[in-house]
Length: 522
Ligand code: NAD
Image (cartoon, rainbow, N blue to C red; front, side, top):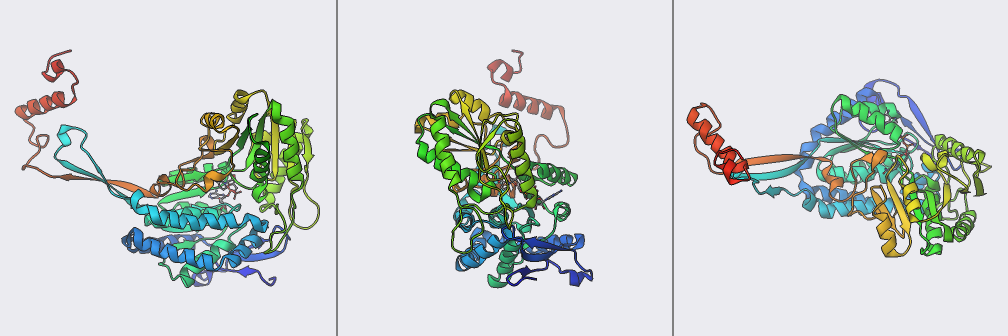
């Protein structure tokens, strides 16, 4: 093993305890090709044992209440704040990110701990409901929110901590126990956090991970009570199919093909800088990446010139703790092939690359930041999720054409509109997507108070805000009888006088005109 690499066994029961020798996965640093660490794959028995153990510990965790649980999560926050550089080193080693890509990820996770710590009590408070009709007037109606005992989180490689922890934190804060199956390409930073939870924070044994490929995740689905999946729509379908076998509820946060609309009254410098960052941040490996841009005709040439200048000036490559590069590596080798396929398809069908357009030469796995023009919706690059440092730009006659093209997609995760505030907001409200940013990109991810979720094939369910924690709970309606005799009129024995009483009640309560109330036809 190289120096500085991480060797771990899966959390939960160890393979040695199981008397078997584990299968191993090597985790490579995509920026250099070097080994970043190795993991032991969790066996099916280990997955079942881990979930069973967490399930046993969950009632005590739920019993701590919102405040008690926040105290523990707050300690994890403090540990993270005390160890930022070390955590960033691990994320960088397993993803090949530029250093500057990492701090928003940690900011998000820590902010989320504080957000749900502060708001969970309000979001999960009991609700008292007024009886809707005289025949339930004698009841006190309460809705309480109780967590799913064990939530299984399946996460992708593009933000190994933001996705894995971002989904775990509200579930833990809701009182669930959580088991995470991180991406096999980037499990190391999550393992470090779980290790800190257990050994540095000393947190209750309600948070763990299992390790391996999709097969391990699929097995985990059979044991947990709720599945939170973040990844591609292709895998999302498989997750939903597997969960259907046990009728386990799922939330799916899937891919996107986010459009940006640039109106003729936009601040073109801001729009071009936003487009460059929004499409190239994290090498474009962001579900909320700007993947396609529609620009109104009068400002098209100027916008494209500004965007191309900004993108062609980006510095790409491996840096260390000091940010010296803007665009890092492609984290998953599979994704580079998708990016190459989309760009080659576009170029073969008449598109032009104004900058980039090919994989970068040298060590590591890099694709050059690429701006494509002369694209159209027959091309993969404008239809399917590229998930790389590539953006296609189209000229449109007016905002109506921009809207039609923006909505011409099977995805609906997020979008952005740049222009005069009022006009841009009007257009934004007509985009078919779960979140739309006006004069900004990706910023909805930081606005934790509003829900974020995909329309169409971009997902099911929401993260953030009240829905982002309630989804980890089941609602329990408690109907309390306040005044009662020995029997209700609808109970046994059935008699003619009771039938008349009940029919009268039925007419009296439900009829909306006097005649029918009195038992006559209308
Ligand atoms: P992926 O779907 O290939 O893998 C995601 C996770 O699913 C991994 O942990 C993988 O091991 C697991 N998995 C694979 N096969 C499985 C199966 N049959 N059953 C259960 N789990 C299985 O996704 P990826 O390539 O890791 O991530 C990129 C995708 O994630 C992109 O489409 C991106 O848009 C999406 N994403 C979405 C959001 C969002 O919030 N909507 C956020 C980040 C990433």
